[in-house]
Amino acid sequence: MTHPARYAIWSVDWEDNDGQDYAGTRFAQVCRPMQELLAELAGGKVTWFAKVDWTSDITDHDGLDRVAGAIVAGGGEIGLHTHLFSWEPYWRERGWRRGLRILRERWGVEATSYSSGMGNYIESDTAALASLGFAGGRLLYPGLKHDFKEWFAKPYAGLAGMDLLESPMGSRAGYVDAADCRRYAAAPTIINFPQARLPEYATNPDNQFQLTIGVNTEANTDRLIAHAASQSRFVHAYCHPYDMMDAEARLTPEAARRARHLAQRLRAEGYTFVTVAEAAKAFGEVGEL
Image 1 (cartoon, rainbow, N blue to C red):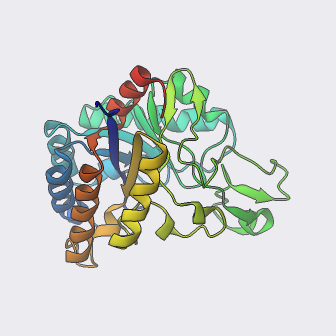
Image 2 (image 1 turned 180 degrees about the horizontal axis):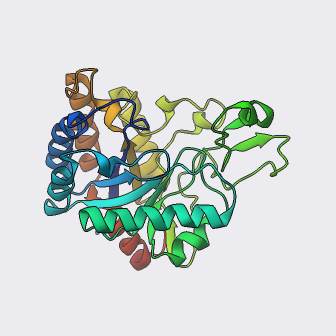
């Protein structure tokens, strides 16, 4: 009996905490061992979403271009990651165009995959991203509710995409059902692969119920993968550099162990690692999550 193909996406929101965490060449020192480990575990098939926006630009870090070159040479992918603090489509598109241009001019990368910042997606984004040539990514996050007055009081007012209680923007902004990993954004030319999550996330939005090695125990990782495998032929795990490093820019043994366990469990469930671009192509061929 032939079983349907299963695809595992491992992505990194490649950000430096808005330039606060790592100075000079230290960010490249942080990312190099992580890149080497994930490439080993996923056969190179890792998508690194480079954060390039008006708040921070990781391409400014010395030496990171060599890490980017190793990612691409090993079969991985570099996409675009932004946190945009405006609802206006005009400014959002300008931000994406700027990010695409910087990746192209500095690293020679033509990004076709996109990761929104947490709570940073609005419904009009999908068509706009598709018009810029994006084919796939992680756009939507599970529903989180925040008081809009509290968010407006913050200096950065990072409202886009949040489920805001009593918000003048409306109560929904494109989130998926936390209990169902099959939900996805639908415009003809861009497909969203949300990270895997357990049903508990619907009532307790804690990171331990999402598939990220930052906080998941091995037991929870097993539950997450089993749940995703029961629903979908695609599963998406993600992390950040700071999830795997200590304050001295060293890969922590615990993070490495969790990463190895995640890779082993995905392979045991019959998943093949692919980049986001490859997953989008596969989705076009199979026509279902």
